[in-house]
Length: 443
Ligand SMILES: C=CC1=C(C)c2cc3[nH]c(cc4nc(cc5[nH]c(cc1n2)c(C)c5CCC(=O)O)C(CCC(=O)O)=C4C)c(C)c3C=C
Ligand SMILES: [Fe+2]
Picture 1: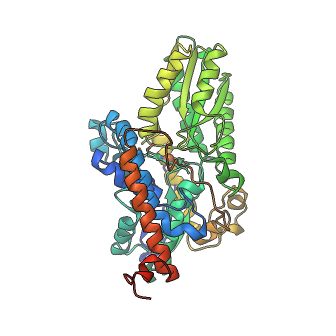
Picture 2: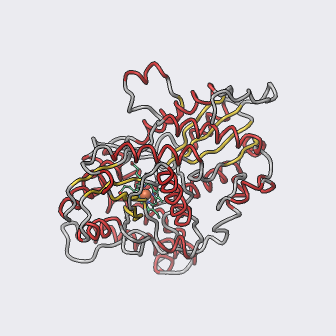
Picture 3: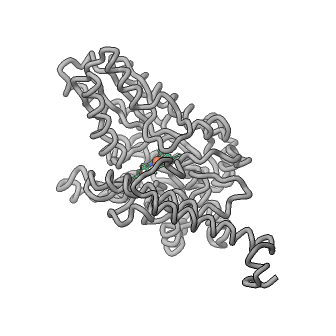
């Protein structure tokens, strides 16, 4: 973690790139529905049975239209769009002059590039989002234009999940496979990094700092809230997310204990959508329970994401805060996201430098890499270590809300259109049906 690391001995014609992968979020309210469409088109978010894969896009169209009004309300309440792009771009390439002016809004990409320069590694840091601009495909185009020869792929999720880093890596795999330049470009992936000392210390420091804002810091309940995933991801597809999350919380708590912090803590999962069972305890249920049990001071710690986003700014800061106060909690606090925290960014830079020797090499020969739940390696090697059978998973999102609602008529129309589409596809595929009988389609 020192700034005085020796320059890396790289051949002169090597050009190093770092690709930060992230989720992406709508820049404006008009972007909400197309953003949701991209999200629900992802088979790692809604995995349909093989026979029904052709319905992925119509279904995504349907669900995104259904969810857009509620989702847009959330984005409207945080200023009309997601701050994710701005923060992530700033995380890549930090310009210290501008930092003095607007400290908080600085993106991780800028910061990481600056930190790598300080550590004598000239590298270009790119941002590739999964569901919105700048898309991963756009970042890859730039990487090709810049003639990058060694690439370190760094998903900006501390813990690995099939639905986040896994989905981004699957997309990368398909892009890499279909391009001659990329097939030959050497790369490695840092699949998860919640166990890194710098990350753990940075999180512990942020938590400690918030304590001082409470009247009785020793009574504060530390409440880790992670984004949930459906239970089936963990139990049926082998997603390591839950195990990594629990280990991550243990590591941060051990660091706090070593600093003399004795506070009680708990972990819950937020942001579930749809009717299927998600990881428990649910954040809202747990908050109520803590209130009923007489907890008066609660410090919420968002743990699955390193940037401020809709689920910190709206769900935690507004919805959960209100619920906590209604449940009897008197003193509420929230730990800010790491964003461009210098300990964190410096540690990410170290992670990149440590991963570089594995670019193009089989990381499984490295003991430390092998011990991780998801080992360091190339995109292909990584995807071979988990979820290999790509089992069918229940759709996490409600496709239909029963009951006579205001939008029922619109939805009847949409359902009818969807049914016609399904019948049409089935008829074309089978060569049989009414349209063939009536001579509308040739036999
Ligand atoms: C580790 C983080 C995340 C996991 C795991 C995750 C899984 C997951 N998410 C959905 C559905 C939605 N996610 C949405 C937004 C969103 N999700 C994450 C992170 C994780 N998701 C972030 C950071 C964001 C916000 C981006 C931003 O704009 O700031 C949304 C859209 C918002 C909404 O309508 O609530 C949906 C929908 C599923 C189904 C899932 C696991 C299967
Ligand atoms: Fe999500």
